[in-house]
Image 1 (tube, one colour):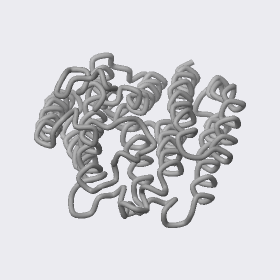
Image 2: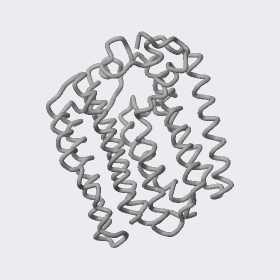
Image 3: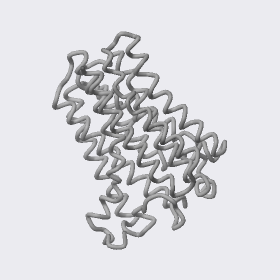
Amino acid sequence: MSDVTPGSARAWILAARPATLTAAFAPVAVGTACAWRVGGFRGDAALAALLGAFLIQIATNFANDLYDFQKGADTEERLGPLRAAQSGLLSVRQLRRGIFATFALALGVGIYLTWVAGPAVVVIGLSSIAAGLAYTGGPFPLAYNGLGDVFVMAFFGFVAVCGTAFVQALYVPDVAWAASIPIGALATAILAVNNVRDFEGDARAGKGTIVVRFGREAGVREYAILLALAYVVPVVILVAGWTSAWVCLPLVTVPWAVRLFRSVSRDRGKALNQTLAGTAKLLSIFGVLFALGIAL
């Protein structure tokens, strides 16, 4: 990344972490499919929910970049991709402005969705913004106190999927509650790989992730449980009679998930960068197949 000019558009794109946007797209796709399933699909609300999810994800990435740098978690020894603050591509002041501007845009989207779906959207939006800031910032940063996984499961699973269904159907269908679980689980699995890869650096920085607190094998077991959860729930949804058998379409990705698990079990350090990227791609493909399966 030596060809990236500090403060340039490419520096901002790097800080936005486009590859992570699959974690914002998948829950919106699945939530929209749930709304479609119950006859509540609304295109403008779906697009607004997607835009809002992207903006909150980007703002959270900016905040994570800034606060991890300030807390010493991102150093020259980091194993993951280059970070904007750590590399000097964006200053602390620039990132703060970026966080404010992006969350402000998300708030604008939230105002529109409040007009569409009512005041409950205010609670969803403000809690999402607050959690995005509290993930690595504030007096009790969630990621530094072993609660990062809970945050991801809650906001990329239940809040995002059920919130998307709600702003279209104006209520949360039963299938949306259940469908939140696989999406939240796979989003959390991305974090689990990240924490397994970074556990030594996180320990030095005082970042109390599950892996730092309980050891590498705990992170590997967590990853396995999250994958298993993702693939069991579609079967449960089918048995419950909420959808057709197409809901089990994501099960075609099981061999891919098994290969990813073997990598998490075996590999160390930078070798896990590909596994992390693979888990993000799995979430994306699983999400699309799951959304199609629910809608059909």
